[in-house]
Image (cartoon, rainbow, N blue to C red; front, side):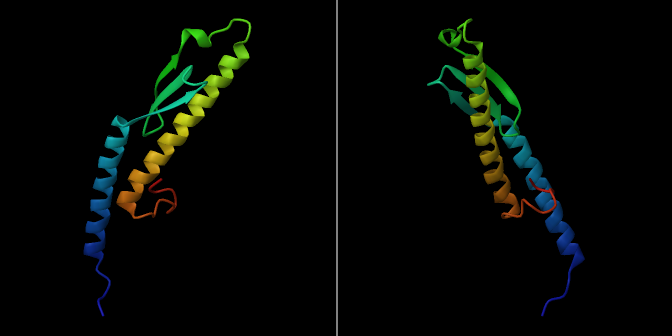
Length: 107
């Protein structure tokens, strides 16, 4: 039977911390896109949920129906956010082995 090895545990924790830092850096560079209205509106977001761009095609703009444009922006933003969260969860799980819910430490 092996005993508790605090030194090995600290080494493992340091490695996980380094791996998480690499994942965060990678996620900052990886982009996802959410779109609405068959591409009338799109939102580009990185893997850290930072919005990088909002694109609105000219034919999406109707001065008499601003609410439709607002709805399209909202839908595109939510789609991009969902994709970004999925990407972040998948990449984080590679490091944590699915322990993402440990007190908010990893996700």
